[in-house]
Image (cartoon, rainbow over the protein chains, first blue to last red):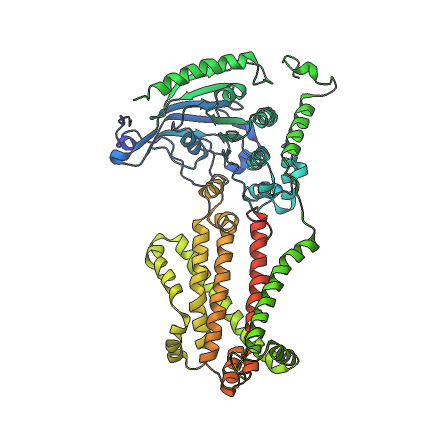
Amino acid sequence: MVVPIAVPIAVPIAVPIAVPIPVQSNRDRPAIVLAAPACEMRSTRPAVSGPAVELGDVTKVYGAGASAVLALDRVLLTVERGEFVCIVGASGCGKSTLLSLVAGLDQPSAGSVQVRGRTALMFQESALLPWRTAVGNVELALKLNGVARAVRRARALELVALVRLSEFADKRPHELSGGMRQRVALARALAQDAEILLMDEPFGALDAITRDVLHDEIERIAAERALTVLFVTHNVREAARLGDRIVLLSSRPGRIVDEFGVPVERPRRIESPEIAGIAASVTVRLREEVRRHAS
Amino acid sequence: MRADLAGDEIRPASATAGDVLDRELSGLDHLELAFAARVPRRRRVWQSACPKVAAVTFVIAVWQVLVWREWRPENLLPSPTSVGGRLWDDLGDGDLWRALGTTMRRALVGFGASVLIGGSLGLAVTRFRWLRIAVGSLITGMQTMPSIAWFPLAILLFQLSEQAVTFVVILGAAPSIANGIIAGVDGVAPILRRVGNAMGAGNVAMYRDFIVPAAMPGVIAGMKQGWAFSWRSLLAGELLVAIPGASALGARLQSARKLGDAVGLLSTMVVILVIGVLVDGLAFRRIERSVLRRRGLVGEH
């Protein structure tokens, strides 16, 4: 059933776009709110004040006319610096759209997107370049980030070591397992020198054991590097395991319908009863949302 | 660190959480690793050479049988041994090498120009939508045009000269190369472009680091086909466009036919065939295989 779209297409004109993101490229995207250029920000990171991500009534419409799809409807979300926020929702709720907007790959139809800091994006498929080795993939990110050739290799090897893949640095993606590929993708994301990590169901295609171990791994790295993480998943337990906060997004149109804090001390374990309890209450709410779409 | 959580007591007291995680990851990694069964090199060479030798032997055997049964008089269809003998003599003679040199030079010039022209045309078509609409199907149309059909026009435009031959070689090869690039770039997974954008690649970096390498398999297939077309057009051209004083493989064929020298004709044909096989096998197939193998797309063959 197609839900009639309440917001007319004239919205972009009616509501002024507060902060359009003018540049396509992530690298030379200036810190939006700040006067300081991006290169200065990189060296002196938390000198910036204010939340890492602020979405103010963000609306995103794809297409036009009768066939237009309202992917996001007045989404209001603030992610504090160093916070780990999980976005949960059924399929088709615009979770990936949200990440694209924060990454600057797409512009909102209305509302404001403020991102303070550099972002890196990780996908469900590792999307490594198959012709480059593990360390070569990380090196490319450094190269595009303007790191001098002389130090690139060493820096890339450090990052590969950080995700504990030194032994496999010279393997190509097809020689690695799914979990290993995602760790290379993580190293590549870190090579982009990002403070804000945007993860789009990064562990969705992995087996359960590998996923559990990678939860420990991402928790460790996010804490060590003081990263802000925006993590999209449809696995409620995963969200409860990882997030400081869980944001529940409804489908069609994508709206924030609920938020849950996860007041469980870290390090956590996915099988712990506290996590299971929180996951259960989120699931109840999620099912309610899904039922709304029954015909 | 993890003292508050269940499962801690089964770990050795000395192990930190990091150590445990490290060992768990390492364990998973090693369980995942495929067993690489590598065939020894000698056996691989043997396995690939054996069927080829058998096929060549079979063809020669059929040829020999036809000669023995006197299907055609000996002066028209000479035996494999006499052709082999002539080939051996020719190899010691300067004229074959001069002819080979001329033909190969023309082939390389023509193919090189085709790569430049076809390559830039292909890249332009992938870049500009209107250009694709305008000439996309025209390129495929050009490919189906037999190169020999271009020669009358080429001779009118350039007389009996090398330019006429090169012109036709380029017309034969460039469309294949352009098509290879178009197919290769069209086949690039959209996720790779997305990754490139997310990593902040500009226009140049997008092509250099993402699109061009990703399109390589298609590009090489196009080059391979382009070479085959240019080699064919070239030999056809050398038969038709005889340039006085210049010795070339095609010209040798033509003069052998005129002189009724069947042995010389066949030995030159063998040279042409061998060059075709060698260039394909040693140059293109090798590059193609290494490109595909690096991406895990192909095994041995």
